[in-house]
Length: 67
Image (tube, rainbow, N blue to C red; front, side, top):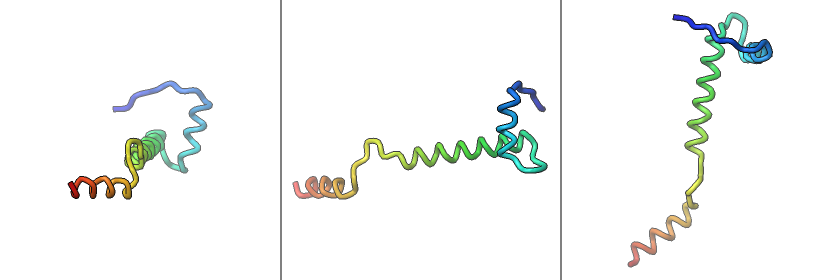
């Protein structure tokens, strides 16, 4: 089942730039969505917030083992 969304001509033209000949807007939007999801997963996996360098973690673990 299809649905209609209202977008400006400017955005429509920008979306077209992501497509190739013969692709539908659904194809283009699906490709953009998939790319967005992959990027979010990559950012999540590469996020170093709250992380410490491996050397620091090893030193910390060694101190605990020595006790």
